[in-house]
Length: 451
Image (cartoon, rainbow, N blue to C red; front, side):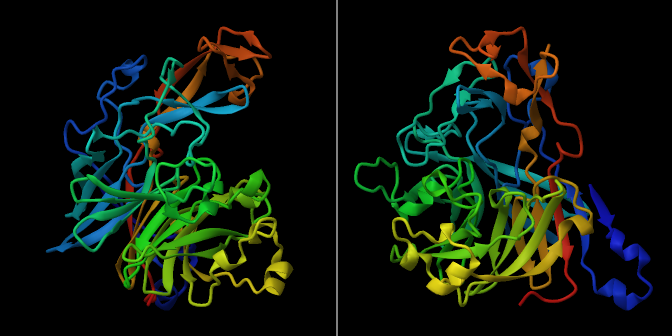
């Protein structure tokens, strides 16, 4: 289904020249083949008679034109999950379909429709992987407690991935990025994992993959790599979603998040600082959505998050990396650039990337909370996709008056407590309403070429 969108700002335009100076968008609601829903037979299956909607759009890659059709590759994240009360001080997460394997799909846009096809689960020599968190004590663990929909504890096997971006590997397969490790994952076109790279373990640390700078282990939980792109020279650039939280002390004050460069041919790495907008209540509220290469020095990047007035922002920036410092040269214990203000960064000679606004998606009519997929079609055309979180959310049944999710805890028996006392409140899973439950794909035409 396609809906032509005209930005509200254009309604007051007085000339054709003014109209031509603004981007325009075509919006599609992605449809899926019959039977492609996620199977769900759990405690709340009656609310999902056809299963769960597929949550594509965590990453987006333009793969070419076939006649008048536009074709894309996309990837899901770790699977259907919903919020849970904490276990003591540990975060909890309900995995509605814990056997779900993150997967690749294709999208075809043609004749006013966008259709997803060809689902391929990610797998290795042992079979399909899953999206469950890594066990504690391993680099990449989020220290989340994973629950079933009946609040039974689930234990992962350290093969879990929370996949996000997708980019070609130049050999017929893809590179994906992940929020846990954070990891870079090389796969073939069928979704088989060829190689995994993650923060290199220091002495005394345990990891399931290495080869990337150790410092990125300080990503905020579930805020690892959110976007990935392959530069024309073959380097892979991955974007850490939010500011690093080094020793649990830097996330609120850091002025930038990190872009990590990895050369698959040599293993060489570098890191650049992307300056976040100065509009958030806390700098840790800023989130990267996705990235895509324009040339060897420039990328497009989605930055989003609620500002100091709780107004959601979704902006696409053109980012210049040509003069940005390699942060590795400044990473010293006790002197990490994340702790520096602008003056100290300048005195140390740390140069961040620069950026210019390409598209304000909210002004263009974007209503979804997150834009998580970004693809380059040509020099004046980009595509964006949201992540519908598999159309599920948590609800409290028989809640204690005046209490919210954050006020509850889960005890060892899977019961909810308030102030250490078991209460009658229980957890429920229900569908998201539209438009949040829709998988959207936008094709945006820009007034000027990006390169």
